[in-house]
Length: 299
Image (cartoon, rainbow, N blue to C red; front, side, top):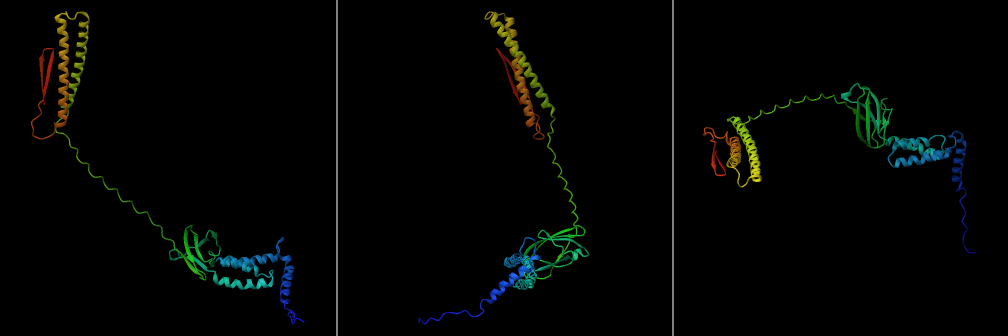
């Protein structure tokens, strides 16, 4: 003999497991008729049981409570039903709630619609508390008169019946516009005391003299060309004198145009400066010379 004592199972050690499995199967079979068509009630209970735990871990207490209520129904097996029934009050204690009500500025107002994170909650207009998950939430409240109030809140786990007072700020009248300031008075424009007509007269005289110069200069050149082509160098004295007279008149007109233009410029630039000074003197000197004329001016 080797001295080894063979192990023996304790009587009935596998009985609880067998009984539990049997109960699950019996319960599933007994409630099969109550499940939705095509859906095994056992699977529905298991899914709700798993989802309740998963939602609770990520802080979605409202969804976890809903799943816990689902797996605590009579249709579910007893082991699952017992756990889920125990979770429901625990989740009730953890899930925070709020009460939305008109504040002092909106006393007597009636809530028409309350939405939390974009989802309409019918509990608030009925005066009931709203269960939320812990964290930040966006509220949109519409009063019966059409006023909409937006609020953002942060609520913590276990916080119960927190009052959210909706105050409506009174409508502000637009502030009256301030009158536009008057523009400053225009500064007086300095004007020359001397009249402007002398400048215009001198400019006109200069233009007329330039026209005279152009006419006689062209005529002289034509006569000169004709004499050179016909009789030069033995042309008559009268024909030569006529040509020279045209050139002389052109030279005199050109000088007069230059002096008149200079006088107009001088009058415009210095005519109004210095009160009490002597008036500007403009003089033109024309001297005949052999073969032409000399023109001079004094300002």
